[in-house]
Image (cartoon, rainbow, N blue to C red; front, top):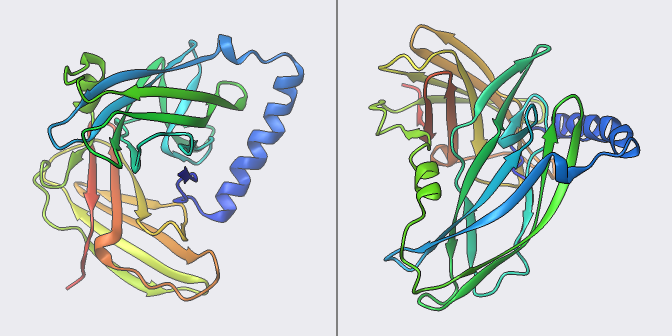
Amino acid sequence: MKHPRNRTNSALRTLKNTCLALLISAPAIAGGFDADKVIKVSTLSGWKNTDGTYVTALKVDLAPGWVTYWRIPGDSGIPMEYDWTASKNVGGASIVWPRPEIDEKYGLTSFVYRDRVVLPIIVVPTNKGQAAELAGTIELGVCKDICVPVQFDISQPLKPENTRKSAEINAALKDLPKSARQAGLSATKCGISPTENGISINTTTKMNQDIGKVHAVIEHADQSFWVGPTSTAQKGQTVHAVAEIESETGSPVSIQRQDVRITLLGTREVIDIQGCVGES
């Protein structure tokens, strides 16, 4: 059960970020980079829900000044990769991402976590009611003056008798982005037009509250698509976001609007929008 990194960034951006990480991490490692002094990753035991799913979490502690990244790093940074193939009685595992901090430096915008972050994981067991174990490896980037990819092996037993909720995980679950419904938004409109290599999607969201300066991120549920960097334009409480979508294989791109995901990362609030409707 290997989960490759989220491919919302375009191939070009991914290549740029990878080359950046390689170029600046090599001197760091040569100079004696000590991951143990920068980052600590542990797991939290969590609990079993009444529907049979398990809740666990990764807890990431960072040294002062260092950051790690949200599910989409932004203009720079290293996205997380994870591989759960060593797990037992696990049919699926999904990381739930609390809202990140917006970090703007040198003309680049990144979405980061500092100090400590708890990343809840929802685990669906193959056989509900039986014990499970989430096990495997994760690789994530840490950055300060340099960026370095670091890898950890994790293992967390999941027991059906454990139903007591963790205060740390609960706190993280309360810091999630709002859904469009929770934010009281009407449907986001989107137009689709062909490009040389795929399609361009242009979305418009009218907000009914001030969530501050917004950086939008467009994603698509189909991981065989590359979604390029999102361009955001904001006028008052209306946000326009544009991104290009291409197929890895070069084949024509056809998408369903309900599979589009738009995240509005505001300086005051984050809103997660699932799906859009055609422009009238």
